[in-house]
Image (cartoon, rainbow, N blue to C red; front, side):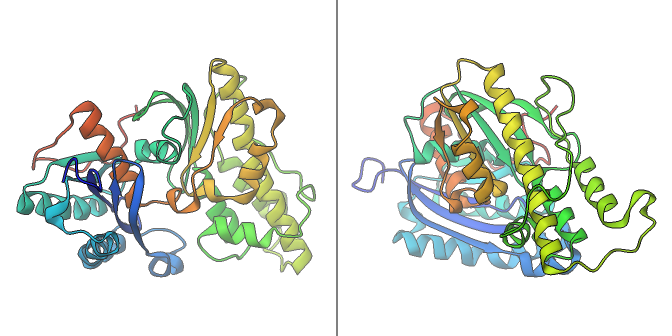
Length: 349
């Protein structure tokens, strides 16, 4: 269907963690469908993603999700121009499910197959929103499994500037929520609980590491909240918090995570003075406080800021299809059926 009225149609499949997702994107930017099935209810009792449970769920969901994505887009496999699929980073068992589905579709319908890096796709989501995003651009990707800063000098190629050395921002929010007795996943729970709370009620650290460092560390923040609740040496039992105390704890903890992310973005901007734009991606990029703080940060004034819509921040198939289209049409990438899953990102050491 290349050159047709609907343009190039690419199906994107995403199964790197606990969302089974598929989407159809036209010409790399127009999202015709974007279907996501979340496994939150499956993993809630474990307060985290269990790889075996996740991969089994993907096996039962991936084909129905793909069918729904095609139906919602009003298209069929024979009208597609390519199939893109997440191949890295992620849980290998989960990745293999999506890759197997993509290979089957590509082989059966004679379609090009494109393997996509999940983190690079989060970065590329901003270009789907604003294709003419001025470059170079500094991008923060923050989620439950990843927190890193990237420099983009050309679409589809993000170079890592800094990364987390322990907990990711989303993981820290999950662990903080667990300490406060809030439901999983922690990010949305803490955001809700923080409403009306005093963000200055508790003195929590903003871990910046060494002078000029662009790396992240959130494990100490979680420990600081634990010591606040149970005292030095953990000598007290976990307290029963009233509504006000809970709101203050949640607000203070959320503020510490957000302020750390903002300060690191300011550092990145200073390290790359020629940067013309700033973008964010990943599940934590849905956080309302983070978006508001970045929009009002005077030290980032003058940068074009792009905050993708919420549905393009969490794991989704649209960003996979968008980047897949770019890799094929601009770089000529086409993979064969030997395509395999890899646990780490290309930008990882």
